[in-house]
Length: 387
Image (tube, rainbow, N blue to C red; front, top):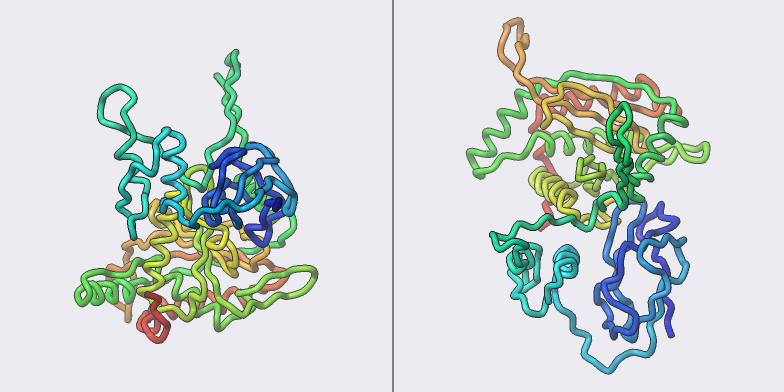
């Protein structure tokens, strides 16, 4: 009999919530088969069986247990080939919720993998009309409970919602940041005319232009490489300077703010960063991020320009030394060589931990960032491009 313990799925994880089991006690499971959904401090993920055998569940759905605590047992291995149906975790969850047999579906994903659309197409409508399915992804989880007061008071009926583990963790980290970090802010205004021209030239050649956000992430990464104290943290009364430049990008998903990571952004080519940021944002909104996607960040970029905000201040993501808040690229009158012209301007605000960064450090970093975006050809030099 082999014990299955609560796994450590992220560096900061100390406990996990059993969201739900995908198999039942007594079921024969195969190695690599999706077994249980676990909510950590960062994400809700599907954990797979590490061995084959008969399942005995110890921890029920809704229970929270520390890392290393037993949550199930698997008995003697079954004499069956180690083959399992290929389906995404989201497809498995949707099929389970709608009592659909995955084995009866034909997968349209890569390699015949069953994906969300396949399950949606097989979901019968509730009232005889065309099927309309609301899907909740693996991450973020919806609030677990909601209670409405029976007697409306002067404020009307009150709905009390219990936050998810990731929401509680995010709230605690924000409180920690405001309580323990002596922060200051510095703002710069960047002429994005050069970036606009470069995007137009790239689009004319390749048919697609990198987003402004990707250009900012690339410029941030190059600036961080030159200013290592910004790519750092103040921990245990010491400076921790990170050897890799891993830029986190804040993404607003349903019921949560997620920060997936673009690893080694300083050495990656601009087109690769463009693909990576778009893919991470999409996976975050679809609930397909893993703990590995959310760990390892050394600096964070929060971009609310798509909402039309000109400028805002972001809260530091502990234990990082700083976070950059990026506003919209706006058309404004600018003076170039003594001539008033129409220009494109972006405002960026750095929130910094004063225990590790001084005003001069922040100013130097923002100055280099401004240089890189004003003359953006440097963003195209070097860097690898992942397949």
